[in-house]
Image 1 (cartoon, rainbow, N blue to C red):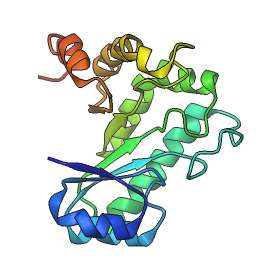
Image 2 (cartoon, helix red, strand yellow; image 1 turned 45 degrees about the vertical axis):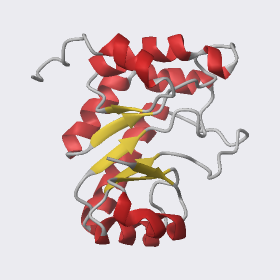
Image 3 (cartoon, one colour; image 1 turned 180 degrees about the vertical axis):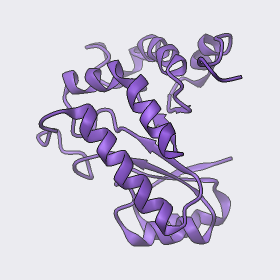
Image 4 (cartoon, rainbow, N blue to C red; image 1 turned 180 degrees about the horizontal axis):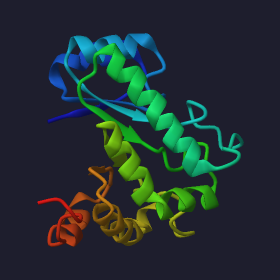
Length: 182
């Protein structure tokens, strides 16, 4: 299975027949991206972001967790009504959120995951090497990433996006499934 990460319809159309997942950091705001996903029966990964490309000066205001849940509901409804069968929602760590807001999302991942699952969608979290994890250089954040991967797995997160796959696989493979899952 291959996932294509793009927000450009021309790129998505060019590779649509060779992919399984279409990951759009703009949250499928462009109707052409939705059309490509529907016509090619692709799973849609929609990420929450205030600006695309990300602008570090534009940051969420107010209750971040509530806003992510409202975004998840609206996005799921919009994509489902368009005919997308498999919808995966990403709260967009690092995109329009400051360090404290990213931790607020992580600390409430159980509630966010439960909400997204209640919609009939899945959740992906891209936390790998993000600057909110530590002040170390990005390539030195793999252990921090793997430690957070454990918490995300325990919370029932369906997919994680990581750079160091072998480390994350090793550290999470022997964990029991989330409560209530077999």
